[in-house]
Figure 1 (tube, rainbow, N blue to C red):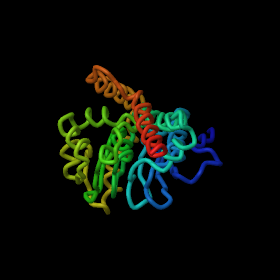
Figure 2 (figure 1 turned 120 degrees about the vertical axis):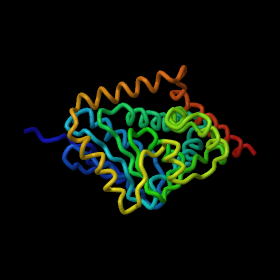
Figure 3 (figure 1 turned 180 degrees about the vertical axis):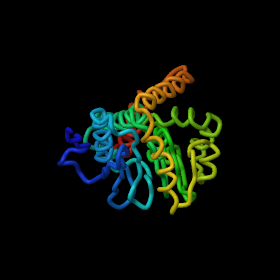
Figure 4 (figure 1 turned 45 degrees about the vertical axis):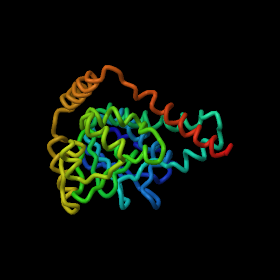
Amino acid sequence: MSTPLPLLPAHSPATLTTEEDGRVLHVRLTPDGASILTTAAIDDLINVLHGLHDRPDLRVLVLSSTGEDFCLGADRQEFRALAESDPTGAALRRALDKAHRLCQALENTHAVTIARLHGGVIGAGLALAAYCDLRVGADTCRFRMPEVGVGLPPAWGGAMGRLITEAGAARIRELFLTCDEFDAETAHRLSILHRIAPPDRLDAAVTAWTRPLSRRDPESLLLTKRMLAGYTRADRVTDATPVDSHLLASVLSRAHAGRRDG
């Protein structure tokens, strides 16, 4: 029997850990301090998802975090540093393109993806969770899309289209424009969460999914995921997500230029 291929390069920074449990892969973000999604973490997540192409034996991926929060958003300090180092905005666009690639990789991987959520699920963290197939959250979770409140378009990873598809345009419009925080019960009503559990029952709720899913026929799982994705995308006359990273990079670059010239 051949040795399974590693899912992370040996030199990878410690932004996450992976653990295999039979046919289930647990991917845990390991933030250093605040639960911010850095470019290094995005690179590592993309590497893990790319590695899954060579691991058809893994049928389920569970994404979680070891921090106090699941994820409090993208690293805006990195954005500012990239804007300063490259006034053309090209470096910033490349970094933001990675967010789009990550979300597409989550949506398109053969494995069923499960988001195990706790604490704050904010901005890019909510986008990351939304692109998972199934989402369970602690009943103490809090959610927010703060981008408009800090002067940015909600364009990270193409999350707007995904959230509109999952939860409906009217409520997502309200939450994007007002930047209001909402709780786990509201997220469940909106179908942003499929299930809610007390924090000490969160792992049991995940296992209630992973146990039967790991026994399913892999081809049936893959074809069902492809069919669901196809019908979901058919609801969108136009898919603008590929340009979201360029839009966000443009706004951030202009904002930095304005501060420099002011």
